[in-house]
Length: 274
Image (cartoon, rainbow, N blue to C red):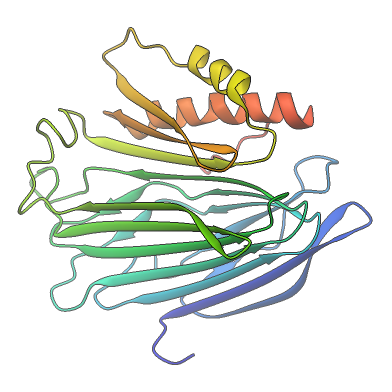
């Protein structure tokens, strides 16, 4: 396993309309539950587990996921990602995800909670066929400290790279450093405490669909702010400022429901663990 605290490799394939694991390997403080099939679509749902309950100083995690042609998967976590104080070495998580022709992946991890003096780096690399579909979300909270102070962590850094036919088509990099950035202020969090991001890539996305997305967003509210941008490939990215994880999840849920209804005529199911 080398220097990795936890390693997880999962290869899945389509067998007569049902997605099943071809190979599963995990070692150390990183595991995956047996798949759950919420409906008759054949899509497998996997829950990622951290048996230790959180990430500690110097922890390093590696995840490799591969979906073969037409395989369909939902990937989520058992609960919030908790990063405890890291006095010496930052916590690092790396994911490499391969999506072959016609495959479909929903990757919906729970919110990130960085504790006081935590330093966390995350890198996701997606390599996808132009006919594959990707839905990815993440939520960054203001963290946790014994006195209830917000943004008391050292650094939270999230990097997403999406390659299509080996060409970099999406580069998304967030780095929050409260020591040198006025996170609650103008130009950063704008007075909000939580930050949500969503990236969707699919050939079916066009301007009429983006217009439908705009209709879902209520701009006459002080509960959140939302920004939507199209990508250079068929797809879009969304940023959300809010004051709770639940407000961000509500918007993600609405978008996910629209995608499920419009593209797959599928019934949406809940991934909540609490």
